[in-house]
Image (cartoon, rainbow, N blue to C red; front, side):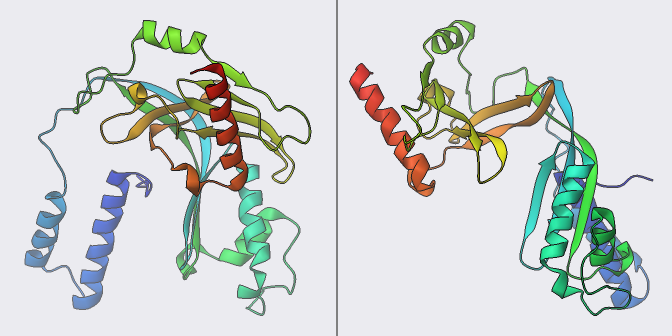
Amino acid sequence: MIAPDPLTPEGAAVIDLHEQLEDLEARTGEWPGADVVDLLGMWLAEFDFTREPAAARWVAGSVWVLRRQDRHEDVVSLWADETSALASLAQHARSNWDNVEGGDGIPDSPPARDRRAVDLYYGPKDERGDEDYWLYVDDIGRLASTVPAPDGFLFPDGASCARANSAAVFHPMTGPDDEGLPAIETGGVLVFAYLDADMQAVRVSVDLDTADEQVVRADGTIPLHVEVGNATVFSTGVRRVPTQSRPGLMRRLIRRVRRMRWWRGD
């Protein structure tokens, strides 16, 4: 049986059609032919069957995808393994245990085992109400087009990339009391890699606000590809985030980097 992926446009479209047909059956008790044809006609009109796909190569890695949904949010996160994803889901269940406490077969306190806590909190798949989740392993990759983008954008060639890479600058912290973070600057892009005590993790952040214009596409996005080991964990076009919308710590780091550029005469 084919399970449509709700995270892809095609999968979401199939699920939407299924829901429309279910609504039709609920209203009429059947699938009236004329109504079904109308639904299919409108559904097919959303697709473009004339565009020729660009030749591409596949770059991919394996990752666990967790989608958690309720009345207030629809959150998608990526995890290196099923155990970590399940632990995150169980943490959410335990912090909201009062939503199910007192129900049939539900203990007063959440179980210590993650799987048991999740199963009790969400219940059987066909009986879930406002809250639900999907957890599955998938390939994360990209289709790298081998032809110019429709807007004419061309990423810098090999020689330009080599010049930018050779001019990369490392911005270290000046000491434990420094308010900034260690970062490498390449082509105006700042990549921070540091130990985060609050998150209890090695954290990697990318700031694109000062990226060189040569890597910015006409729609304002920047092609970004991230790998961990041999796995591609992120690959898409990203919009630059205005500096003022970032946390204060990051703003101070950006200002410090810009002062360094001024001192260097960049």
